[in-house]
Image (cartoon, rainbow, N blue to C red; front, top):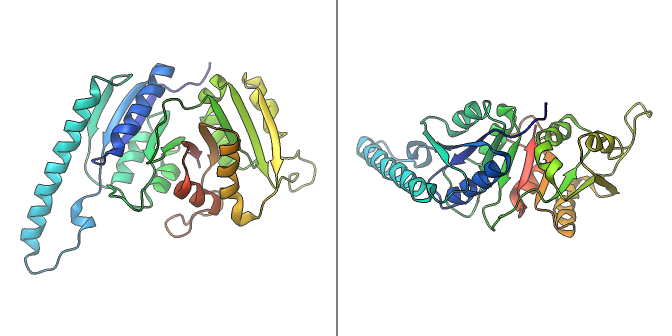
Length: 279
């Protein structure tokens, strides 16, 4: 049986970027004959806007009214684009902690689509949202950059491979894309044999696996300072003209709320190409 994407959960919010990632999700769903769920869940303004005790009840009431207007505007934005989507989408709306809601729904999907956190723009989620969903959902997470247009994803794919558990899960989660790609480039940074000295060099180990799945990868290696691997990933993906990067996420830090893995942090902050992560 061939694994494919059949259910895609796309996180939707009240920012203009939500429409773009839903359009991306619908195009992916059309390609794989999948069902799309637009999941609306956002951070409550009661938590994002501090207010003092004096007049607190009044301010809280106003914030709730503001939230109601924002929720209605988001649903209106969804309704306005629904008929023009490449694939019809189901609307779901749920209150509570946005990350928890998203990863709980994501566990019953094949792919979760999120938006890059924009530090200089309004956001409906907290900065740790992507990390929490990635780690707790158990599913591949496709992060769409907040800037740019992405009419095609997965024609030219760069896989950042280091033989880690996270990278292995990312490759498996990306197999539907990889099988249909025109070109797949596997790159390993600072490769070395396994700790026991008997294992293959990363890159040469995953290539036969991909080949047996109908993928024809090219493999290369590169050297870089550990602190610069994230920048090198982005640079090499640009050189390759990749429209999708596949990589493991948070491989070096369990305390993701406080310290992200260096390459994950860099890619999430500076990405201009969609990235499929897995943990």
